[in-house]
Image 1 (cartoon, rainbow over the protein chains, first blue to last red):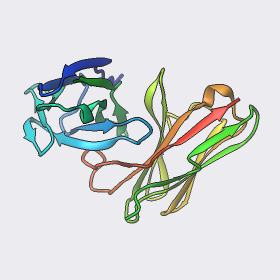
Image 2: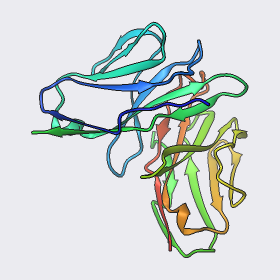
Image 3: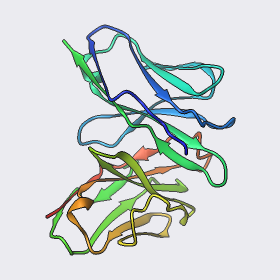
Image 4: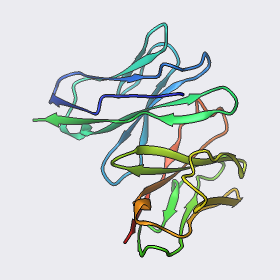
Length: 111
Length: 116
């Protein structure tokens, strides 16, 4: 059974780097890992996506080790506006494709 | 582009009543997804369509739930009869058909459903 798990919550002070992990132990060779951010009363929105090693864009970095059984979203120098819930998304292949969101990590940024 | 449009934004109904949630995906997107979000269960995929055809409905809780996509610009999620445990936020999302694993899903604002 494909499971995608994350820590329930994290706290961080403003200006610090935050790393949020996602475990996806049954990920297939061709599956990508995507991260979304969700603010209260809004739908999730795309942050970053990767397949292996490291991906960086203007808001985050994504680290994926060689075995690809986990991934880490890195937010540099967080601000109060980064307080949100962060989800990883994996589409598991095999049979038909199974879209699976992680359990979500609530990040609270503290002044 | 207006993004994914959902209606209504809020729905309060009584147990046993029929509820219909509506979604208009982004024009040109070939995938449409329905999700349910609750505190206890997080974000759950209920069903998704590709080119108006249901592909995976294994997340639909039971026969009281049904979804249709009569054309590329409209989809409905119906609950009949509704129960208090169906109270949740229901999201619709759409994406291009470049590859399910690589597509970015664009979410609507959600419909907050309360069943009394």
